[in-house]
Every structure is written in structure tokens, then in C-alpha cells.
Length: 308
Image: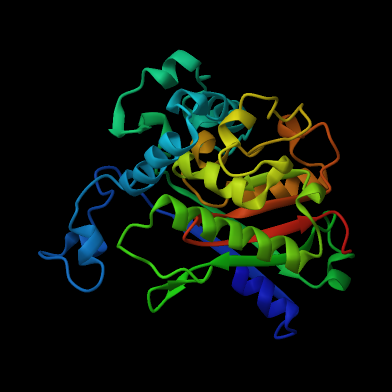
């Protein structure tokens, strides 16, 4: 997505078709690629050899978060319930098609641990899926069938030579909480600054949630709805629904629809076009942010109803 946006923005082409597919065959998840090799080699051996569930690193960061800010894991429940509710309104999603079951607070807080404090419902479900997007110039988009949605900016985070894009030297294979928070904040500053907007201009957010726990870091880094570090779980206790003043993950995200890493883009576009159906938020969908994936490695897009 980012490559297509940049190519059109730089005038290298006038139109790009972006296609993404996920293929998770029954019994084959994590069985191919590097996982099929007899040994772990290269830089990845330092992390991959720990052999824990994929969410363990996020769980470690979140455990520190809970201790540092005096919160509890159960405070994630409203976010998870909201995500499933929105996901059930996404007709292409896994839960909407195959298991249209609402989730309760009791379901969430009593679920088994996968990597404490990440439980079963803090992890998304791998699925078969695909999507395609057309990226073109603003002038060309005027004549297309659907209402155009404009890109104000895209930005992300990574690291090179052991130094993160936030300018922090990594101290280990797994980023600690403070490194994660600073990387998320740096991404937020780039997103908003490059778009020429502030967090107050963002009507909704569809930031990545493949592991629900790091959604906290994303929205705090962005400063969505004015929240600061350590405040996301308190914010989740307010009205974060599509009917409320601060819609959180109206797509349902990967937690509510299955792992795609692109539901958030699809929903953001549809919200601004007014084509989100039962998921359509009540407030004007003027500006939204979507993308993924983890705070340390990501790319996000700022979508807008207008080009300014």
C-alpha cells in the first residue's frame, strides 16, 4: 500500500493496483518457510529460537505497562467486545460468516492464557482472505465509480543498524516498553505532521490489533482522542463504539474479523465513502488512520474525505 501511494505521489505512475492475499491452510500454519528448516540461522535465531507463541513479546511489554501505570488486563475487555461487535458487522469477516457469536466480558476475562497476560481473545485468528485497492491521482479519481478517498500522508517505523527510526538504540532482541512507546510516539508525530493535522482532526482510528495488547501503544502514540501514555485502558471504559464520539477500530480489526492486516484499510475507505453499512459511524468520517503492524515495524495511512 505504502509503495503504491508513494509511486503515485512521486509521479512514477498514475494508477496502481494493490493486491494482498493470506493463505493459512488447515494444519499448515507456521509449518512453512523458516519454520520448516532443520535449524534456525541468521539474525532471526536470537528471537525465533525462544520458540514461544508469537504474542509473547507483546505480552512482556504489556505486563510492564500494567505494572508501570497501575492497570489490569481485564480493562481490555471493552476493546475486545467492541472489536467482535464491529467485526460481526463486517460481512466479509471470518466471525460474521462462520461463527456469528457475540463475545461477553466473562468470555474474555475467563479465557485461557496464551502468553500471559495475552489470552486467547487477545490473539487474532489466521484465515484465508484477499483484497485489492486502486491507488490513483486525485484528478483521475474524480471520474471513478466510488467517491474518492484522499491520502494525506503515510509513515511508519523500523530500525537499521540497531537504531530505531525514533533514534533509540535497541538494547535487546525484544523491545522493552519504553522503546515501544517512543517508537509509537515517533510514528504518530510523523503521521500527523506530514499530513498537516493534529490528533484532534482524527475522527476515527483503525490501527493494527493482531495482538490486541499493542493497540494500546498505537493509539497512545498517536494521541487519539487526546489520550496520553498510560491512559488507553481508562479510555476503553468510555464509549468507543461506532455510535460514540470516538470510534475505536470500527472495522473490528483482526481481532473482530480474522487476521488480514487490511480490514482496517477497507473499513477506513468505506467509512469515509459512507459505504460501511451497519458499521457506519454516527459522527462524520472526515479523517481516519489505518495500517500496521507492530509499534516497532509498521506503516500507516492517513485517509481523508477532502484533499486538504
